[in-house]
Length: 330
Image (cartoon, rainbow, N blue to C red):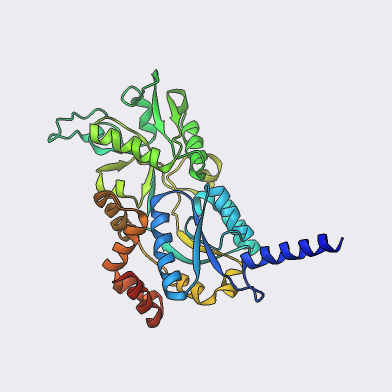
């Protein structure tokens, strides 16, 4: 019995040690990775500053939007660098109201999302010898006139709309929107398995000059590099949006949020995160670097920090900035 009791005590101490010290301070800061490139870049920027400037170990926890947000609420994740708040509005507001998570800053708020097509589908591209295939396509509703243009390669009787990956919160929103407009009667909805698969679908079509329609968003290297058109929708109306999704996407603050205990566990890091602010254009610079240099998000983060030393050094005290620059060789 004594041996069993001792084993339980030792196991409990090990679990506590993994979470933090006796004062509730953190040994390691865990960031959410919801599997798209921009969140990976922002995570890497934050990790560079947190590790080299404040001396904490860091890690990331991967998962779907729902799983990572729940991880933040539970405290398994400490920091979420890129919360697309209106894609998970109900859950996000509930967690804010209960105090489980704290919004510390707005990372960027000039982003767009919705159903996109390559602009050459509407206007053609004389240089590439592409004729306009859907010259009257302006709105989401107009897709009803062009299912044959976006033919499903596995079902010639219907068109294909490419959705976000099934683990993303926006996936269900797009399904509801398509069903509300009756487009499901003439289009199949394809949900790729990952961000990479979604990118591959669009990039492959674009490079080949083929028609494509599907969900996308900014900031991404794709929207920075390709000439795409966001299809228009009804002006945003909160009541209509909540009932049917039959409007454009709501304005979407992309925020930095932390678990409720984090400000006390790592107050100096929390203060840094309160200052964290970028933009769609700034984020896309790192994403284009990933494409053009075949770089990792971590490499793009260092490139971005070199390029924008004047920006991020304002987020932290001078001694922290100097430590980070020395470690990264900036």
